Length: 98
Image (cartoon, rainbow, N blue to C red):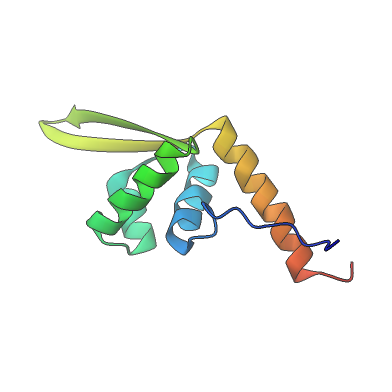
């Protein structure tokens, strides 16, 4: 039996991991902030946010601010747990002899 755990395929995507990493630190972030921080296109970011939302890792709230649409993303308790599991599994890959 291998000691390496399977890495969560939802978080193993670079952009989805970046989104969740940002939300771990901020709890709530605007779509535009996430786009600026990741350098992703709006279309690609929207697709990845939808995948995270459908998996229950984040919540998405849409509202208006000064007559402009605003999309807010927040990490869920499940998202926090899955991020911690992913991080711990990744540590085994980085230090296999520990």
